[in-house]
Image (cartoon, rainbow, N blue to C red; front, side):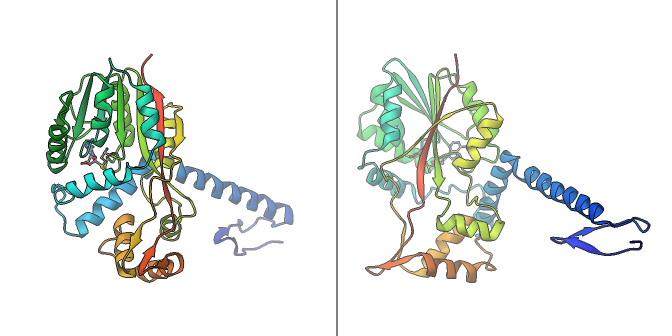
Length: 319
Ligand SMILES: C[S@@+](CC[C@H](N)C(=O)[O-])C[C@H]1O[C@@H](n2cnc3c(N)ncnc32)[C@H](O)[C@@H]1O
């Protein structure tokens, strides 16, 4: 067959040179080549995990800006006390991560707590270590941590105000970062510095979402990807790219209770904040339908499906 014909496969044009004979074999060959192109494109799209992490962090940061929040403002300013209370409530239950980390540190060791918040981990570890250094960026969180250290009569915790990884720190035996990496655009640099400052074990605690969770379903719809936030799945792949083959222990005590919202509007605002969609309304109809379908109304409250657990990731940093 001679001539110019317009064929397409899944929207990709199948081009034939004017004089080319489009026999069934030629068409099959072109289809195979196109399939290879799609696969290569898809693989290329998903392999830069650090760039994916950065994009998700920036989506959230831009969302805050659209809420007209000053990027320099302390986002914990009026939430630090509530945060301390929420950790206290959650920690009433036993937790495999706390038990495991305490079993690893010893009385002669020094521990670095990165993004220490109100100091829950520093205070937990202090009686089991020689010294704990708590690095924390928020003045409000530091204020509450100081009050707690005083109230608990703990003298072997020192606080370094500042933002990791741009803080001068001597090496410690152990380092821990619990849910304090989600605003850092370069997780690879964050981890490299952690390794450089650790003689023995590094610990990370990260959000591990359920892939059938409501937020992941929303992310698949909006971004065509199951990544609702910078989280364990992405971080673990960044570690692999850094040549770190870390161990993982999934928290198995049901520590994170399902979220509750008083109204669907409140649930929608929560969803928009979490996904970094504040100030954008083009997904509201979709999100409202999703919430109506997946939240369960019980005793006047909307209960979210259980969709998150904590992953404890740890590896040997030094010899
Ligand atoms: C969700 S809280 C977690 C606090 C604590 N690690 C815990 O698990 O209870 C996150 C804390 O990390 C701090 N943070 C976030 N990024 C940080 C960074 N790059 N350097 C130091 N602190 C940081 C925040 O100010 C906040 O206090």
